Image 1 (cartoon, rainbow, N blue to C red):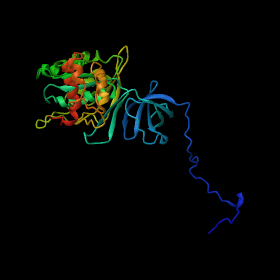
Image 2: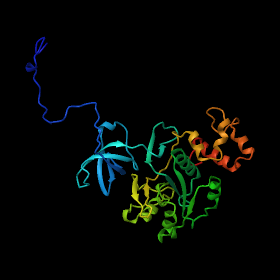
Image 3: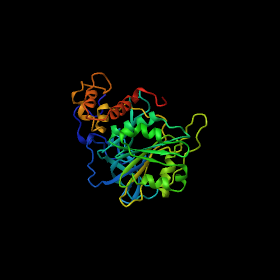
Length: 337
């Protein structure tokens, strides 16, 4: 049934008023040229706490960003109320290109990757030498994620008063990964924090590790004015701690050169379904040129791999090739193996 006839005039068309006063929808995205730059400090249920200048501002993601999510460490453009006052809410309208990403999947069969931290340049892998027992396969997986994401790894071994660090250090010696070994006494008197702080100056460092290894305790010592609740007791049956850090959090490091410490929730698995072996090999500059003659889609752990000849000719240490292949094969092994 035609309401206004065949050729209606403008005066014949009734326009229903918009009671909410909203602007009509458009496909043209605003430029937001006056947006301020900020950094995401933490994310909690859709609310992002950001640092804008010297103010801490709570914001939400703009609808025009679609499904693109901002994570801790992201550099973002923000509009709206930037006073940081209580009950104010700004809006993130742009996410800048990332220089690095730390990613993981729930397990090796999960096709959905999750970005844990953005724009960090170092990954501190915190592992206890006892209580709970160290898990080398977990360390391997974190190393692969670091190399894949463009982060420099740092190995932090805790509780050296309970067990020796020699075996683990020998295992990773060929990789040339910087390391710090600390005891429980050094944790309590601040020596451990000083030893680790030497590797953090002027850098953005993400900390990962199982619950119970002392990761959050160490972060609390590094940034005492921003203390987080330390990890609960270690389960005597499973040998694992209880998660108390539930969201990643970026904290400023008190240092002349600046720097950031990013505490992440304790992990029990680190899936590597997203990893491209061709990116991991880039972390081995002494081996990477030897892949020029590898067959297409070479896994670097097969009979036709050209790296065997490259090492045999004396271009690289055989221990380096062994370490590379151990890391690349970690996807096929369970973390507890």
